[in-house]
Length: 249
Ligand code: 4AZ
Image (cartoon, rainbow, N blue to C red):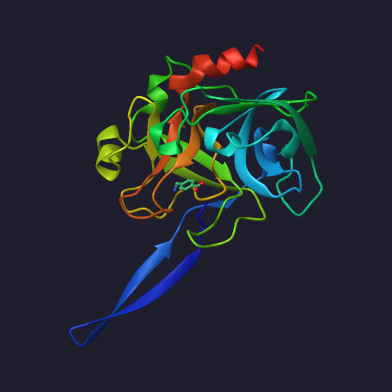
C-alpha cells in the first residue's frame, strides 16, 4: 500500500526555466484491524511476512496461488488479529492443508487463488465471498477497500502496521489497454487512471472488499501506483464455487 502524505516537489528544468511539479504520492492510511478482523498475513516458519489473506470461515483463509504454490503447511503460518507486525497480539495459526487452484500457472495467467486450512478454528469474524450473482459489486467506479502490510512505495519497505486504501473498480477495457494479458473473465483491475493509490509487493493474497464481501484477491500489476498501471485482482465471483467447495472440506 502506498502511504499517504508524502509530497515531493520535483524541480523540472526545461528550456532554461525551472518549473515546480508536485508529485503527490497518495494512497493508504493506517486502519484498525478491529474494523477488519478477517484480514490476515502469511509468514514463513520464522515469522517473515510475505503475503496477505482473508479469513472466510473459522478454519479457511483465501490468498493468492502465487503466495501458496511453493509452500508446505509445515513451513507456513497465518497471523490473525495483529495490526502491528512488531507486536505479539492475536494468534499465529498453523496449517494442515494448502489448496492451489489447479489451473494456476502464474499470477498474470489467472486462477491466482488458493485456500489455506488452519489446524485449529479461530474466533475472528470471517468475511463472506462475492457470489456469481454479485455483478453490481464489479461495476466500474464501485469503491473497494484494499488492505495489507505490503510496501508503502514501489521500492520501499513493507509496512509495520496494517494499511488500507480505497480504489475504484476500473472498466475492463481500461485494464486490457493497460495490460495485454488481462483476462476480464478472471480478473478485475482497480485504481485511478493517474495512479497514486495501489497495492504493492507484500499485499498479494490480501483482500479487495466491496459491499461487505471479498470481491478480489491482490494478484499482480506493473510496479505500484504507476499512472496507467492499475492493480490486478483475482475476480472472486468467478472462483466462488471453487472456493466454496474448499470451505466444505
Ligand atoms: C506483488 O509483487 C504485487 N500494484 C502486488 C500488487 C501489485 C503489484 C505487485 C499491484 O506482490
